[in-house]
Length: 281
Image (cartoon, rainbow, N blue to C red):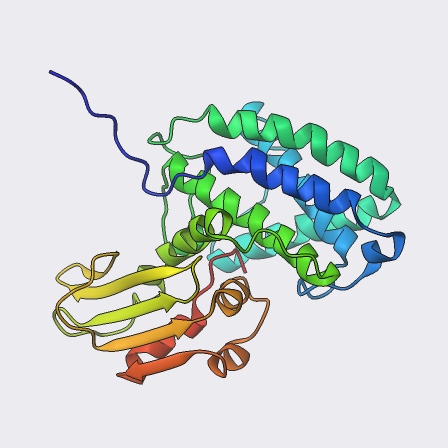
């Protein structure tokens, strides 16, 4: 009897080396003045975002490859406590790396990026991950989801840099679709407190060739996400690809995004998507 391997819901492992190569190419092309340009990451400059990406590489290698957790978070009693702890870690790192030159930063990103990709590829996608994907409401996640979440971190921070220096390159089907597909896994958690009727469905369309369609349907177990179009749609939300990634990473506010999206059908049922976050914030 032939055993058919399980299919990874959102495969991203193969994209890490490609995305990192894009990052190194981008950073090497920057002029000295580009490094201090502001980004949509609020208080962070281009260099700050790049150093945050280095922190992500080092932190994952230390925790996942070397089983070294470093600083203990203390007592975490809520989602907010966890976010506050992570924000403090991020701020500490960015401040400390102000003294690091762009050349040193690029060199370290290149070295750690390769080790990072090797580490990610070594994980069994269907074994429990070291951390859950909390923004999707999970208390325990599988490695494939943890890896996909890591991919979204690398993608959206690189895109923040690209926006700041006006150099596109990863808003493509290959790189963008896995990002937005992962982000959409937060939909059921976002709607968890929204009352629905049996089989009531919200359609979410991310426009452009890089996007897609997702369907959130209410059933006995609550809201469930699917890519199969049901017989009827009660609310439809159309968002362009650029607005979508910015909205779900808190780069723009819900009121700003609302002016750019198209709501039809039961608008009250579609509007909760404006509160969805697919990052720890």
